[in-house]
Length: 376
Image 1 (cartoon, helix red, strand yellow):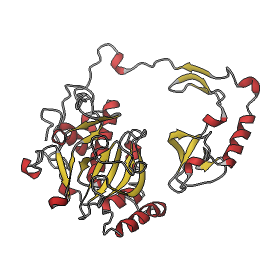
Image 2 (cartoon, rainbow, N blue to C red):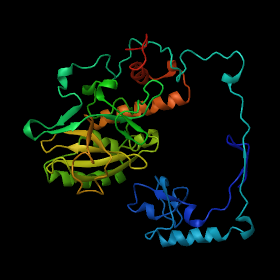
Image 3 (cartoon, rainbow, N blue to C red):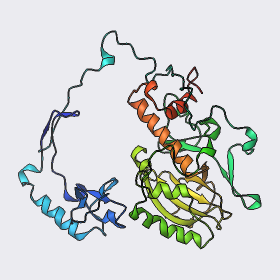
Image 4 (tube, one colour):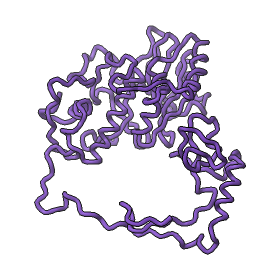
C-alpha cells in the first residue's frame, strides 16, 4: 500500500520483507505459548487463533525459531509467495515530509511561562481544596533510621536491602547526574530525593485511579495458581497486587505508560536473600535490564523490589554485589502510583503541555523539583 501526505512522509511505500522477519510475535495473556505464533490482524494469528486481547508484541519478531507454529509458517510462506519477484528489490519508496512551521519558529514568539520543559518554569499554585497523595514535607528521619536501606520483616529475620527508586529522568527538572547505578534508561535515585508520598492513603483499592473494572477471568487464571502455591507457605498475595494484575482497567495500565516496560507475571520464586521468603515477578523493562518483583517475607510483610537479575531464569543465582535486590516501594499500589505519575509527567514535558493544565497530583509531584509558589 502506498501512502501520501502522512506526518512522516510525503510518499511512503513499503518494500518486500522476508517472511521470517516480517511478522511480529503474537502477544496475549490468554495463550501460554503466544510467542510461537505470528500475529496477523484483528486479534488473530496467521494460523487463525483469535483472542480478544491479542496484539503484536512490542518486544520481539516471529520467525526462524525451532518452536514456531508450523501452520503460521505455512501461512507466512504463502503470503510471501504473492510478492512478484520483480518487486522484491528496489520497490520501497520513502520521501520524507517537508518540515511544517511551528509557532515557536515564528518571529516574536514568546514561550509561555508555564510551558513544561522550561528550566525556569513558573508553576501555578496547587488549588487550596486539592488533596493529593504527594506530601508537602518529608516524614521525620526517625521513621526510617537506616538511611539508604529498608527492612522487610521484623526482628533478626528481617531482610535488609539497599533502597532506591528506578525511574524516568523528568528532565530538566530531575536530570540524571550520571552517578551510581542505572538500569538502561531507568535511572536510580535515592529515596530522600524523590517526592514523599502519603503511604497510609494507599489501602489497596486504587481509589486515585478511578474505576478499576471487574476481575478478568483470564487474569485470575494467572494469579490463582500463584496464590495456591503461596498458601502452602502460609503466605498470600496482597489485595493491591491481585487488583493490578486482574482488574479490567488496571490490567496493563503500567504497560500503556511505561515506555516499553511490560507486565510479566511469574512465580512464586524463592528469594536469594532468604530462602524462606518468596518473590513474584510482575513487571520488566523491554530489554529485561530491570525487573520488579513483589517481595513476600515469611512473616507476612511485603514490598516491591527491583533487580537487574531475572530470577525466573537464574533461580540458583546467589545474593550479592552481582545480583542485588533493591527495595523500591512499600506496596504495589504505591509503586504503581509513582510510576504512572512520573510516566505522565515525562510525556507532558515532551509534548510541551502547560503546567496549569496538569492534574493536581502531577502538579504537586513536579512542584517538589521546582522552587517557587507552586511548591506545596
